[in-house]
Image (cartoon, rainbow, N blue to C red; front, side, top):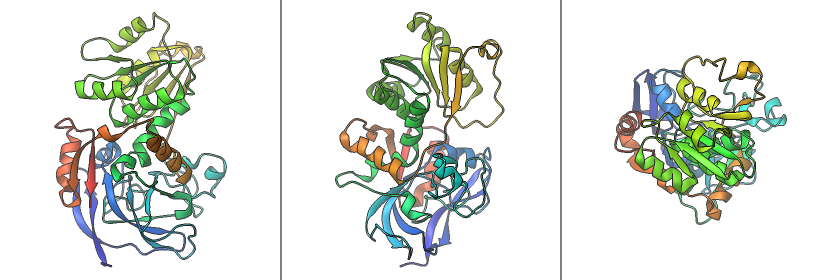
Length: 358
């Protein structure tokens, strides 16, 4: 086995390069996986732009699909050569956060305490997945075997995008018969639309201006698409709902404008489920918030991770109830990662998600 590997390395804001790094050493509870497919996330673009701080020299990426290359001495229940995924969020399984039922906020396995985005380690606090090899911590809590018959690209959305989008619907507590609005139909918004349908929404209103994304939104379960470039989305959603408003609004972009619009379309007692990554302070307008007297809920969610979450998502893919194949629009080798970042960061050529094959 080689001693070094290629990796996408964050240098400074505006600069991620393809470089060389040592292949990681494997601790007792770790697993080393050889990456066969990964991708670039919108959060990686926040890192590239300097909107989210990470250390210089860090390998980026948090959506791994691969094959177990080497197991730690204490890891049981897996074998080398097994195809696996790991979630973008890697809870230890035995932290206070994990044992309290919120593994997404698990601040690390070794007593480091809680921190914001605690469970997100790949490409945040430890080296990530845009490389030839990835060290997965707490492997027994995080490695999920890929069912026979599923391709890399079929499960590629499970570690982050699918888990995050579905969690927007789950946190919103959508009920059978609900009307739901989903603001922005990027990869996460599209998965939130699919999640809303699975949760039993009777009517799903997607807000999107790009025709190709609107088309996929309809395939994912949207009943109406509101083009915000042509109409005021708040007025149009009020019209569609006969002035009632929506039971749940999912914000999947991370902008003041969409957050505020999501708040304004809620019925009294409705829920705003926020999935966006915000890079500046949010304002809550007095009227949209009913001066704090509207019985509304605002809930935020960090992508659920861990092997059981991954298993459930892959079961949904295998069942045929959700097809994420249309989300992968471009494919690159790891050697072309800088080109892939340029394409994805500038949202050219109708890109939704890129598949990176080391």
